[in-house]
Length: 208
Ligand code: TMP
Image (cartoon, rainbow, N blue to C red; front, side, top):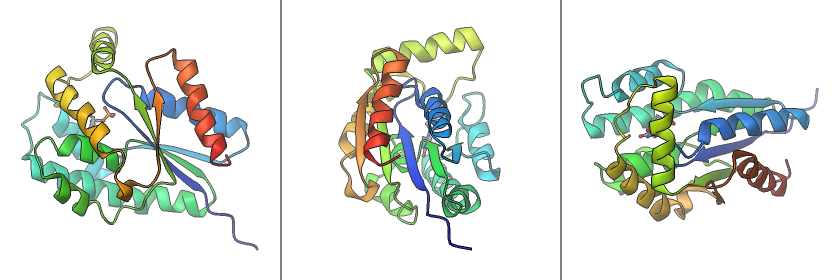
């Protein structure tokens, strides 16, 4: 039997409240309707290391030492790639990851040296494309606050406005890093369907 063509690996990125999770879902549905096999996944992953990270991100839990947290994110990533992403790509699927290496640069560089964060992530394969949803910090922050009230979400460690401002600055600073591969920035401060349409255009340009 002929080998299946290798799939495509797409990362979806942005500050908290930028809509990465709902847009990943919308793109997954659309790609499925276009006849692609799709794996919708996320980081922190659903695996053992990702589950541990999520527990410790809650403000109710004791904080992890920042460098230890950065190493856990990098370890979760390699485990996620080996256990879920690579097999799906080998089977020809389009893999959509809600967050990937750019998240580590944007968030872990709050407390750790960015060059070191890049180094511990050097073994993570480059996505074919990273989609960065850019939303003004105040808009994204208001969305997160609303979600906490409406859905009773868990407050996480990086949720404070001042931190989100610094994280947004890091996204701007690091999105041109050649180690990440191509990054396409989409304006996320518009109705969700228009954001989805702009993201779809980027995937169409990639041949999907
Ligand atoms: P989520 O809220 O998008 O599910 O992500 C959980 C939090 O983890 C979010 O605040 C971003 C943060 N994060 C990092 O700090 N580093 C990383 O490498 C990843 C993947 C997420």
